[in-house]
Structure formats: C-alpha cells, structure tokens
Length: 180
Image (cartoon, rainbow, N blue to C red; front, side, top):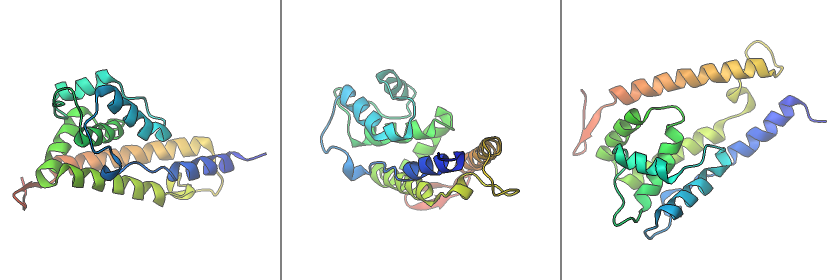
C-alpha cells in the first residue's frame, strides 16, 4: 500500500505534467461566450480550479479587467485574459490584476505577455520536486502538518513578494523603462 509521501509524489508528478495552452493553441477565429467558457474550463480542468462562468466573464468586462467582446464574439485576447485571470485571482484581487495587465500590455503585445506568463508558469511547475514543493528542513519524513504549514507560509511569502513587485514595477513607455 502506498505511503502518504508516495501518494503525494504521484499527484505532484501528474501536476507537473500539466500543459497550459499557448496563444498558438487557441482557435484562430472568434467564438461566443458559451465556447469561451467551455474552452477555458477545459484548459484549466487539470488544475482543479473553480469553473469559470459567464457571470464571471461579464464581471471582468464590467470592472475593465478585460475588454468587451466585439458583437458578442470573443477573440484570442479574451481567452488569454480569462485563463490568466483565473490563475491570478487565486492569490490576487482584481484591482491588482488589472494594474498588472495594464503594465504588461503597455510593454508587450497580448500574445507576448500571455505566452511569457504561460512559459513562466509551466517552467516553475516543472521545476518542482517534493522537497522544493514541501521543504522539510528538520526531517526527511513527510508529514501533512508540516507540509500544510510550509506550503502555506511559502504561498504567503511569494504572494507578498509578487504584490511588491507589481506595485513598484517600472512602467514602459515606447520601449523606455520609466521608474516611478
């Protein structure tokens, strides 16, 4: 019978194999809301996040986190925005995400910004190993209590670092980095 460590390692191996779509994987034609929701939920299903709904997408448009569809049709930019939003909102509020999007899209095309994010996400995911995902400095033995505390602490630390970086990142204007 597998141990808890073996079960976790098996899950982590499957988790690391997740491949999120790049821009070129998106349909090269406009889609409707139902198709957008279906595609996003299909792409993100391996991550076991809460499913995206039409109400969520309408909320993103209403709060100007993403732009409106054109004649009720959504484009690749919308798919990229909803996938990125769904991932980021697990740790960041919408206002911060909106600011991050504005900064990224000021410096890069939507395609370049999205593909860079997916590349970074995938690289970090694949670089994990059991001791990195659940560092165990005092023991070589896996325990759920230690794992929960350490991953929660790591999540908080990286969220705080990310927030600081987003709030104080230099803004780009016409290819020139301008510090606030």
